[in-house]
Image (cartoon, rainbow, N blue to C red; front, side):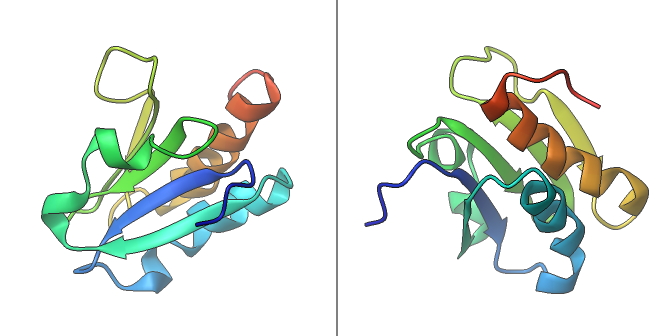
Length: 107
């Protein structure tokens, strides 16, 4: 298992990778490492995608909702965008995950 600090992205195995590229590029622009896990839909739950070393994660559900959150945040998500209808928000969602790591304001 990779123990380097990273953002964890859990994505439903029903989603094509092309739909999440913008999220990944947003994380990369902020120069924070990430781990992408393609898993069965039932495993895309907050407890799993905030289990990384930084406790910051993104879950992409079978319906296309991408949810950014942290372990300490008591609501379901900090930011949400649907990968099918809100493509223009996806890069910011990824970037905001990385900005949480850096302690910077969200976009």
